[in-house]
Length: 115
Length: 113
Image (cartoon, rainbow over all chains, first blue to last red; front, side, top):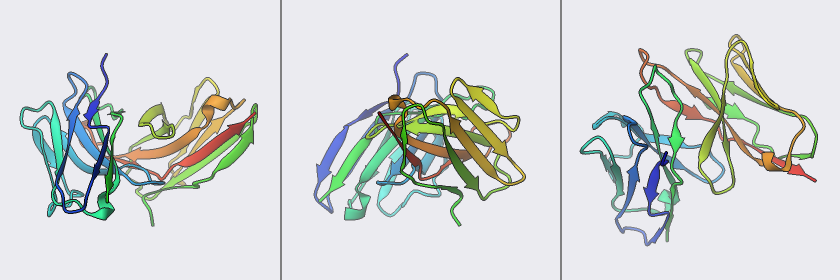
């Protein structure tokens, strides 16, 4: 079974530039998550989707971050404009809605460096 | 107070040693508990769920104390391949559907030959 796919794996941009990350979850997984992980920290949730609906975006900095999951499958996360403090690993995860299981499967992440 | 607190380590142990990690959580309504493992520059992967009755998977034993809001992970007979960061994770269930998971900062383990 293919895992969660993310691209790009690495991205280096200058501050104030836009950047976008893409995620394709495991086939059949209805729930999709975007996390940000700073060095030495655990992942922190940015947004959670149930199918195409964003059910929790309370931690998403909406002034510069946006996300979409138009067809309830793959998703994009965008930052515009990027700031130095946005340098982090952006992780996508998915999970099935199967008897309330909470197991989340993570993609390899996109490592963003903002110069 | 952080929602999930762990000692960041590092724990440096010799092969064959037994090592224990602890974690506390602040939300008494938390309903699901896990340990995830994260190798350097890799994504987190589920190691095991944690149940009130305690559970064991090979060399790994997890315990949950709801009264003290405390979770533990015991690793026996440590292997070099156990070297990683261990993330304590708690979650809320909402009517049987997926809830959000809160991750601790992780405890770094280094097993030496």
